[in-house]
Length: 306
Image (cartoon, rainbow, N blue to C red; front, side, top):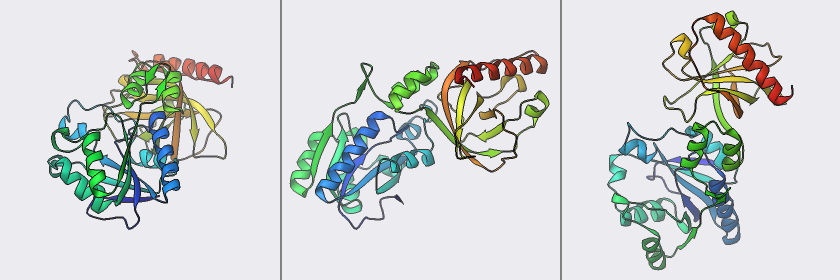
């Protein structure tokens, strides 16, 4: 998949395009992307996605923006898996925020992305002050030679699938419903870094994975599956949070892999959260923490019947 940064560059092949933040790339996003790929194939167009970095709400409301479900790398990997050929990453900054809907159509859709077919969600708004909508796009398309299609929401378990709903069920610790809305377990990718080595003292070696964003969609202790080390899925128990007993401040993902004892610093892992065991909590001393970690490991093994 080709990744372009900024709409100053232009694609040379006419596109079937969709636009969105695609945070989490949930089941609704996947249905949209698969439909786009099929339409592009039928019309002889290039399937393309326009997305934003940072999330617009991080630009407008940095102190109250929602936790990200995926970092940019994860999002791009998930989009690529749907068969998208090209992604343009638009820097959401002060200049872009002042771009009118009409200018967006002219500069981004037509000049940069050579749009011939546009597929959007039924609630899509764009341009300065969210002044652009489906009707404006349809009118522009009739005048400038591109077609516009709106796709209705995907409903799962009686609820509209959205990134907000995914955040809600993750915060509640309902990994099973999160899987239903995402179409897969919730995943965090990251590289193994050196930690404080306390896990060894506690008798549970851990792979410490750096978290890029301070705000997390969930915290706690989880039964996890891990890809990236062998030609099979490894299982383990993980703590995601700030480690209150040890006075942590920056979020960290610590994974203890069952029956695994290798140095893996620098490895890139994909951690799948399949079941929540408990909330993160503070313990009075390391002995109490060690005893609880042992219970967590047993609980995770029992969940996996491992």
